[in-house]
Amino acid sequence: MALARKSRLRDLAMETSDLSKDPYFMRNHLGTFECKLCSTLHTNEGNYLAHTQGKRHQSNLARRAHMEGIKTKVATVAPEILMPKIVKIGRPGFRVERTQDAATGQRVLRFEIDFPRIEKGIQPRHRLMSAYEQRVEPADNKWQYLLVAAIPYQTIGFKIPNEKIDRRPGKFSTSWNAGNLTFVVVLQYENKLLGSEDMEVEVIGASANAAGNNSSSSSSSSSGSGSSAVAVLG
Ligand SMILES: [Zn+2]
Image 1 (cartoon, rainbow, N blue to C red):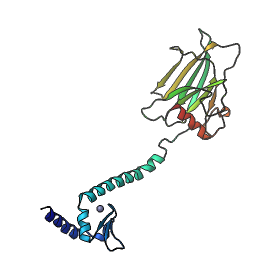
Image 2 (cartoon, rainbow, N blue to C red; image 1 turned 45 degrees about the vertical axis):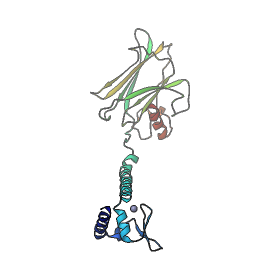
Image 3 (tube, rainbow, N blue to C red; image 1 turned 180 degrees about the vertical axis):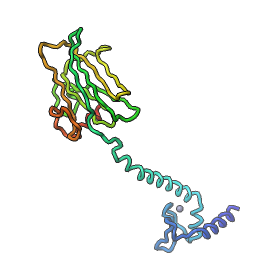
Image 4 (tube, helix red, strand yellow; image 1 turned 120 degrees about the vertical axis):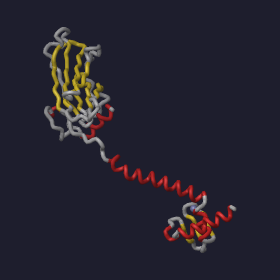
């Protein structure tokens, strides 16, 4: 009989439960009892206990436990999320060479950037960016920017003349040397070198704490702008 089963369960619950420790059990001002979990009213303790064995209360318990579990998980994981996982270790070392293609007279720029502490398994990424895309300094159409990013380094930006770059195969190239952990970008301008025209290359987005050679020409903008360049690159 369902009724006999119910009363057996109630007896069992009464024996094993300590209502004072039940966070959902509440005696209200009318002298009856409430389940705070299910918002149900009960005429006596036995009736409440029978309710705690019922489907409704049990499924509410399960739902609550699930929610609590999620909350606890979030609470324990959150500090790790909030802590920046990537600690930027400053600007990488680099060399820039300005040369000329012997055959065509095209101006050639060669960037060699060292990433001795690059995160395992990743390769540096590069991107050419117009003066209007970058956020580090006021836009000036005379310039364009070559950005190179590699975790955990600060993204490095080279400010180069905004002239047409020769994109033909073999003219523009990048290479990652996983052996000595250097990244090389070689680019050529379409136009030949005109007379004694000097080509300017400037490093941007260098933070104050970056171990800096060549920092005299870097922009004095805040470190925040450096990370905006990272975001654009991503
Ligand atoms: Zn309940």
